[in-house]
Amino acid sequence: MRILIVEDQPDISTLIADRVRRAGYAPHCVQALADIPEALGACDYSVMLLDRRLPDGDGLSVVAAAKRIRPGMRILVVTAARSIEDRVDGLDAGVDDYLTKPFSTEELLARIRASLRRPGGEPAPPVIVGRLSFDLNSESASVGGFPLIVPRRELMLLGALMRRAGRAVTFSALLQEIYGSDEQKHIGALKMVAMRLRHRLDEQDAGVEIHAPRGIGYLIREARGS
Image (tube, rainbow, N blue to C red; front, side):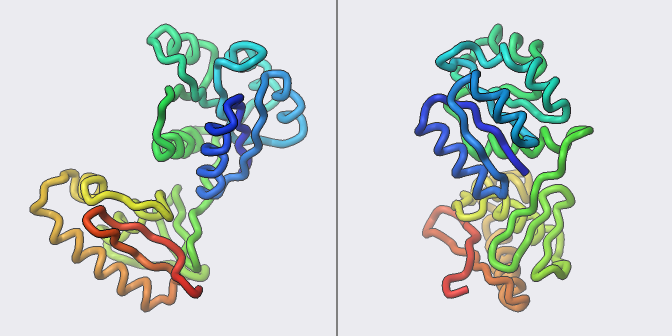
């Protein structure tokens, strides 16, 4: 699934491209409005991430034309133009979402997934680590192509980690997602869930490991030597 990134700042463009690539998408970067028609004509993009303040004009000026070329493409504005009037202008221009800088790459990915879940959108690609695959659309997992059946809380923990594969997820964030609270009374329960999930993945030879950075939380990554 391809994503077109329209951003003239190389550091931001590289950051976004690297993160969406690790999430399973295929990014392509351009730096100006003039580059957009050629890019859209050459490939079928599912999502365009569009800055507003570009060297040759306001990104909103190409929204209508881009929708004509690729009617099913989602357009998410990612910009420093953050006033209420800016947001209203963007949504009225026909963009599907509006995210202001500075932003969290995790939120950006969540918004991409949300846009693709709307009617007419393409499903998000699975996250694959080792032999473990997690389907972001159905919230289901498989190992080597065979379904992985786990209790609900283990599946919730696995989903929370796979959506951020390779990155540490804090105890507070995990407690909020799994228990709806970051109260410390649940930390022991979370550690038990993580222990059982780790053991289950080892039994299935999933080729992953759940690492626990001291005092931070958990992260899932490909097992060393896999």
